[in-house]
Image (tube, rainbow, N blue to C red; front, side, top):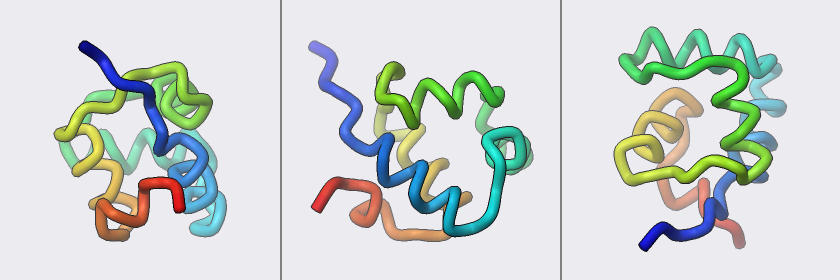
Length: 73
């Protein structure tokens, strides 16, 4: 069973706070070892893409936040 992506809006807010475009963020994720594109970032932020635990770890690492901060309040 797949669960809904609940972290998209928090990912977008953090990326925006860092002043990164979706392309910038995708490049940083690629450099960290996560294979994605600007389109992939867009789908995560729009909650159209499933986010597994491994992906969440990459997102948190690149965004420089604890994983817990990616979850909605």
